[in-house]
Image (cartoon, rainbow, N blue to C red; front, side, top):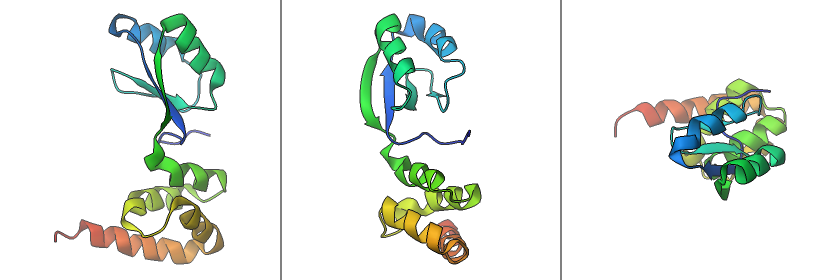
Length: 128
């Protein structure tokens, strides 16, 4: 399933600039890969792709990346609707809840969380 945010945990791979586009092309078909023109971010579960970047492109690897998407990753894996995942991700840092608790309440009371997180999101948009 494709989604528009990185998975947690992810690996940040950095390759020599002259080989960057070649590395990007070599990752064709690998799920949830993000590129920024300097580095590549892919899920830690994509072991073969990570090994290929290391061996073929001498990539420097940083594990444990994309922690800010922990809620979105866990919520998606728990079957939370994509609309609620996006909303929860948008308000994640503004809640007093950790990712585990947010997922639990999203699963147990999705309608209530949609209302609560929508209100929180709207309040975040009001200039203070």
